Length: 272
Ligand code: PEP
Ligand code: MN
Image (tube, rainbow, N blue to C red):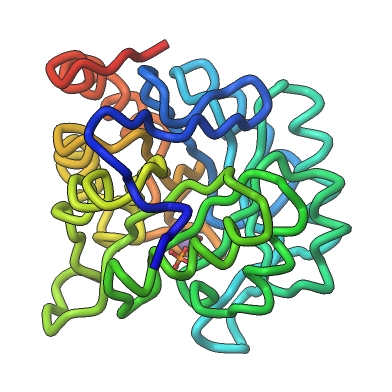
C-alpha cells in the first residue's frame, strides 16, 4: 500500500504545515497554549496575552468540548467561537479549536486557522474525510487506544482528500496505569518520524492529567524530537470548567517556557 504519509527515505523533509504565519515542521519549535475550554472573553484574552508574551505562537481553546459525561460543561459553542475570533483579531495569534461534528465545519472554519480532531474522533472516518476536503491545517490527536498504524491510516483519510496539512499529536494512551490520566508514549514521536513525513506534536497536559508532570514530560517530548507542544494554560486552574487539574497557571507556564529553550537548542531546534 502506497501511503501518502509514508516517509520514503531518510532525506525526505518533514511536511511544512502553515498555520497563519507559523510553520510547523520546520526548524522552529512551536508552542500552542491556551485553556482547555473557552469560558469567557476575559479568560481567553488574559491567557492569550500572557502566552504570547512568554513566546507561544498559537492559541488553543475549545468551543465544542467532548466530555466523558454529558452533564459536564460541554463548551460555549457559537458564543465561544465569537470570543475566539475577537481574541484572534486582538492578539494576531493563529488559533486551533476542535471540530466534533462535520455539520460545524463551515462555522468553525470562519475562525479556526487549524482544526483539531480530538482523540475520541480519531476514527470518525466521515469527519476526517470532510475535514480533508477543507484543505485547512489539522491537528490530529491520537485515539485513546490507537496503534501507530491506525493513527497513520486516520491521517490518510485527510491526506487522501488532497489536504497534506496534517500534524499528528501524541496525547497519551489508555493503559493499566491509573496514577496518570493517560500514559504518554514518548517513543511514538521518533517512531512517527521514522514512519511518516508529518510533523509531530506532544500534548503533555492530556498525556499526564497532572499539572506537576506537564513540564518534565514536555521537555522529554522536545528531546525526543517533537515539532511542537500543546499545553493547557488557565488564569485560575482551580476554578477551570474543564481540565483544571492538568492546566498550568501563568507562573507555571512561564517556568516551563524558560526551560524549553535550552532543551530545544540541545536537539537543534530554534525557539522564537
Ligand atoms: C483537548 O485538547 O482539550 C482534548 C479534549 O483533547 P483529547 O482529544 O486529546 O482528549
Ligand atoms: Mn482538555
